[in-house]
Image (cartoon, rainbow, N blue to C red; front, side):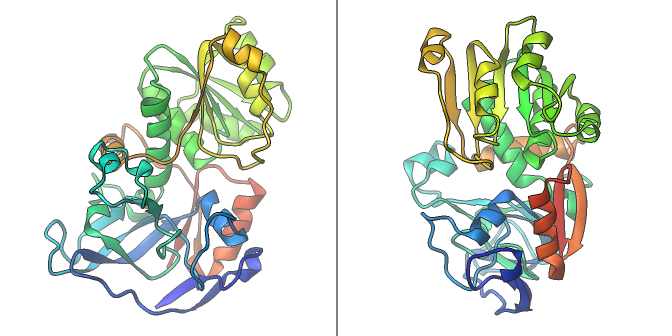
Length: 342
């Protein structure tokens, strides 16, 4: 099969469109012919190298995958060849205490497609049966690939970690990102007032179209000052954050008393400053969040299948142009998900 692999860490130039062995499935696995694979910042981190993760080389990244079942193992009963499916991006053992509680991402053996197993930058990918999900409603392959990672992440952040309630004020940082667009929609559907932040007026117009009530252009305005103005100096109940150092202090200053800041990433760096007096004096909470459980993805997919939540797609590239697609992601000149087509 054709795949995009890297044989060493580095810049986009290390991505090679080349022949690779087609995956061989076990009895409890499914072979999927990839129709679309969505990019995530994780793909770039893996390409450049994550100190704690030693990847097998050559390596195939890609966590968000949709396609058709090409082959099903002898023990597989839930799907058959020809069915349209998407893959739940997180792979866990399914047998430990955390998995039984639905906290898949706390499983000690947890990984994602494209991390310690090959991902979707390829014509075929193999998957455990437990990760294969029929595409809901009338979603096409592009929409199905644009959904899983960002919606499971946003759902877990807002509900499981931050315990969002109807009527609360939510500040969504990075509204132009896939996870930001998912958060805007989920928070709005849950009855929250959504304040979105992005670096351009064009992105903020699109954020409003997704349901944002208010918008802050952080390239021109102070996030903290605007939040105080929009909330009559109260601050927001929840900050949805995934950018890190560049906005951390502004996000923390934007919290109301008893406010919760939930973060799932540090794309601008993890060297953070924290005012401890405001942490305990205002009784604020900082929450880390990583992915989520398959049950949370299924909850989101019900609403996506009903078109109450929607995939947001920026652009698509042929698989052979994966390097160009990653460069676009690094430029931050996009709104929603960037896709690859084998």
